[in-house]
Length: 103
Image (cartoon, rainbow, N blue to C red; front, side, top):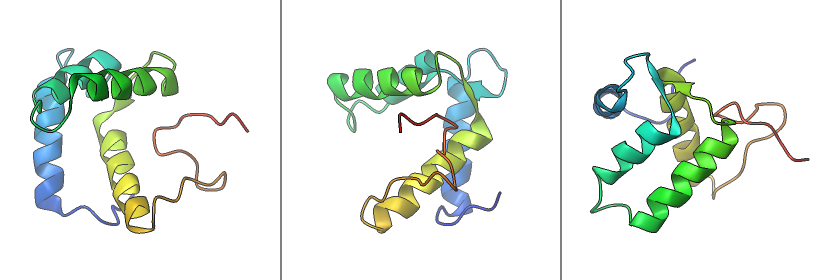
């Protein structure tokens, strides 16, 4: 899948941080690894935001993990949607993290 918004230099930085956070070295990120990564950016995220993001991530992935590449695609998707005024995913395109829908 081609990224629509993220510059490759940014992707390289994100990927390097995700790979460093991947303590299991399985090429995937789970909620605990994400929480650890977010804590390394404590000047950007508050403790309550880190907990909220990691809990939402855990729930969306049903306690599982996602590949680093798929995670980067999800970030790209979020950036594109932020530029469109925060439009959410559609059923046709699916959720960028592969999460289901309550609808």
